[in-house]
Image (cartoon, rainbow, N blue to C red; front, side):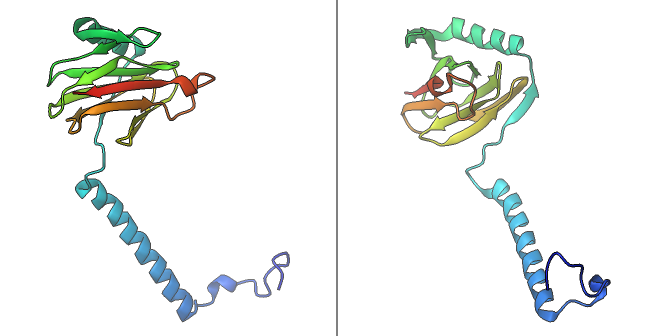
Amino acid sequence: MSAILPPAERLWYKHPIDRVEGTWIVIALTWCLIMFAMMVGWHIWGNQNLSTETYRTTPDKFMAKAQAMADKYTVRTETDQKIPVVAPPPGSDVYMLGRLWSFFPILELEKGKTYKLHLTAMDYNHGFSLQPANINIQLVPGFEHVMTVTPNQSGTYSVVCNEFCGIGHHTMVGRIYIK
């Protein structure tokens, strides 16, 4: 039989399915339902998921908040671009934005203290990949992601853009210090 030729019997779909075929359909359907339940359950009981709030915003509003935080809590500047290192008090709202081709500002947070981290992109889609913790969020212009974070390990963390954003994408790296 060839796939090019029409079926010998025109009403092939009216024939009852074979027992083996029915068994495989039941197995496949059961497995699909199990996987669906696992996805829902993993989100509820798994500790790896990042639950964020997302709000609409404008680049101007978000930049004003980020700049106000940077002006108030800057402790020093780093890199050739003189990006401010900001040490906000525990419990405060902390703002970080992605733009061509940098993250602003560099954050300095305290271990064991809770912060509300606000993230957005100013111009194009950017990725927020916190390494080596492997936390990934896609930043989209016009949307502000808000998450509650409590750093539990000291160190220097790199923030890498994992969404191709143009010719300078490979230079788009930021930092978060946990003291």
